[in-house]
Image (cartoon, rainbow, N blue to C red; front, top):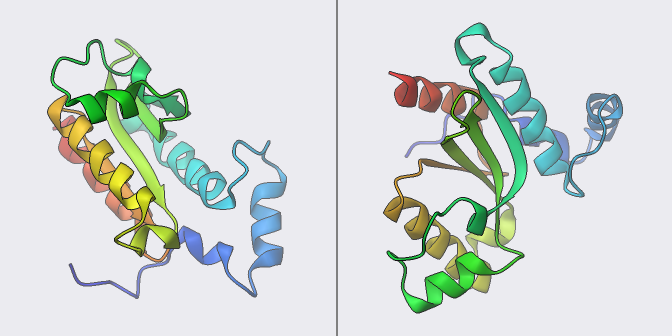
Length: 161
């Protein structure tokens, strides 16, 4: 996919020269995560969900994967071990307030994600496949990407239509 560099990225605030802006942006917020990348994403999600057309949704941070699945019947042994592990969570889960059903999982991938051979990469692939097996939509954001707001809004519109 072509990178649209004219689109602003919330993750720009992670980089040098943005320390002041990042501090200002996050200062009024109770820190939700130890990772500023996740705090920035959380702000963006909350802002998008505050729009009227998305007001039926809310978001939780660090949702345990095992709490999402009613059963583990569709998983391989390795996937099941991973899904049941207490440390395995979704960075964000957007859900419908009414039925509390999951709408969209969101993962924020730092630079280590791009090291294809890493254990993190293997776990991410497993997570992708588990969510796919259970029909949960997933959106991955790279901290080196851009246009997060547009991608999120487009995906929620797709899901809601």
